[in-house]
Length: 455
Image (tube, rainbow, N blue to C red):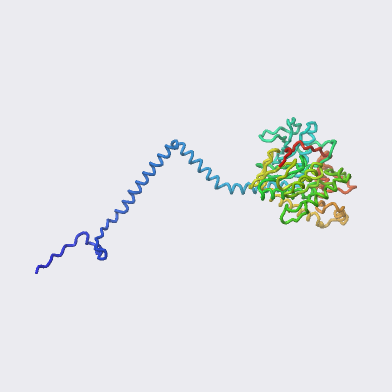
C-alpha cells in the first residue's frame, strides 16, 4: 500500500487561519504597508482633481485676481453679518443713554423751545416758512425749516453744509445769545416738541404744533404702538405744556376713556366762547395747556371729528393707525426706524422707549426729593413750599416750579439781560410758565403740513 505524499506547506498555508474550513476558500492577506500607500495615492489623485476643477472655475470667473477680490468681499460681508447684532446692541445702548440725558435735563426741553421760537422770529418776514424739527448733538443744534426758498440765515444762524433737508445750524455756545421772540399778531401757540429718536449722534425732535396738529403713527403694529406710547409719555411729563388724554385701546394696561365721550366733551368745550378764545393759548399766569388726545384706530366719523377739532386749533391728536384727512404721517418699521419723507425726518426710535422710562423715573425721584422736608429748614420756608395750590395744578408741577425758579435765578445772577427772568414773588408761578417759551410766542400755520390725503 502506497502512502500518499504530504504536500509541503506553501505561502498560502503559512498562517494558521489561512484555510477557512467553514467557507472552503483561501484568504490572501496583504502586507501592512499596502493599505497606507493606497490611501495616499487616492488622496493625491483627489487633490489633483480638485485643483484642476478649481483652476477651471477660477478661469471661468475671470482669473485669480477677480477671484481673490470676490472671496475677500464675501469674507468681509460674513464678518459684518456675524458682528451686526453686537454693533446694533451697542448702538442701541448709546442711543438710550443720549436720549435719557437729554430728556432728564430740565433745560433740554427749554432749549428746543427757544430754538424753535428764535427761528420763527427770524422767519417773521418769510411768508409760509415754518420751523418744524430740531436736531441737537454735542456742541451743535440745527432747525429744519419748511420754506420755498429757504431765506438767508441771520446771525448767529448759519447754513448747513451737510446734505439733507434744508435747515439752519447754530453752535450751542451761542444759543444763550438768541434774541427773544417779538410779539406777533394772531394766535399765540406754544411749541410742543417731542423726541422721535436718534439720527447718527443727534437727537431728533418734532414740533407737533407746527403743522395740521393731526399726527398719525403708521407701519409695524408693535413698533408703532411703542412709539405712540413713548410720545404720549413725553407729553405727560411735568413741564411739557400739554394736558394729555389717553383713550381706550392705546395701552393694554390702561383702560382710558371712550373716544366718543372724549370727543363729546371737547366739542362742548369748544363751543363755549371763553374756551374757544383760550384754546391753545397761555394766559398771564401760564396755567393753560395744549390739549392732546391719544387714540387708536378711530372710525371714519371719529376721525372726521378729530380732524375738525385739530383744524380749529382746539387739540393736538396722536392717532395709532392710518386715517383720512389733513395730517402728518410717521411711518415706523419693525426695527424702529421712523421716517417722514414729507418732513425730512429719518431717525431710529428703538431707544426712545427706554430713554423715556429713565426720564420718568428721574422725575419721580426728584419730585420725592423736592417734596421731602429738608433738615434744618425754617418753618416759614416749609410752609411756603407746601402752600396749597389750585385744584387744576397737578402735584408734579411743584418740582418743575422749584427747579425752574432756581435755574432762572442762576441765569439772572450770571446775566442780567438773559431771556428768562425770575417771576415776581408777589404771585404764584407754575412750572409751565417758567419752562414755557420766551416773552412772546409765535404764530403757526399749516405750511409745513404734508398735504391732504383721502383713503
